[in-house]
Length: 407
Image (cartoon, rainbow, N blue to C red):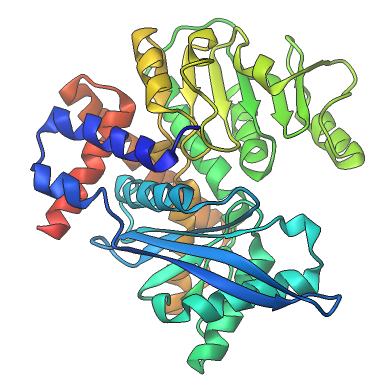
């Protein structure tokens, strides 16, 4: 099994070796500032107590308060949380927002508990990490299994414990509770901006203009909308239950309606059912992993035919797979650039909360468009300067910004 934290450190070493950073500085970044594991005792609806395990990793705060999501998932583990907090540090630095990297998680399946139990688990978790978080210290956000209502509970519990209303205690909240307009579409929209910038550089030649997206949740669906506006054809989509393929292009509206009605993409009329594995091996131009990490390994990377891999998931490519992609002349647009629209808009929400402002969706997406375009331009200039991969260029850019603050 690939260890995501070891993968993250390998990516750092590879980038650092190109731009010759001080080894002591690089070594410091391989260790989170701190991480905690907490036990959360919760009274369940049946009157019995259950103990849940939670984590919070705070990787680096040179650029500002720790920032990162809270993952509710049965397979959550400390190495995954530490890796995700590490990637958050670099993602925030690449997109140039004043946040460091953090990440949290609780081991359980949120779909297997009642809403009341979910709220008690969330509040119990905040009670255990209360002294480690806060608007100026560490600001949790949403992630797999934890959406806006949970972010409301985090903010509310933090406010209750601190004795005053603190809207900036979490981000990704519902609109009535201090959430930001544009947050829901932000990650997919931001990815669309980066994809547009990448394609404008003519890095790949294509007449067919075909894209496949693995993962059709919030991120995948909003990115798909951006792709449609570019005039590219989405020929394959998948969710956790499997995928669909249509060489002439999939009608997104029909796919969304079918998924809402049946709970899955499979069985969509006029398309062929395929597995997630088959989707990754299609002969297409751009392949978008938009689900979980470690999708590409040394085993399946040689079978990938796409010209470009556009990472909307966190850590979908292992270092071994990355090496194979490089050898096979595949362009990889890394997660810390491609999917940073979500955290950029989390920063906008935090800023609005702190300054008691409320921006329109148009204002938010306009600011996000500028921020993402600039991030791509910054990464592209380093990629050209060092004649290296986009991943290494993004890391070098982030390292320069972190080094400036730390030293």
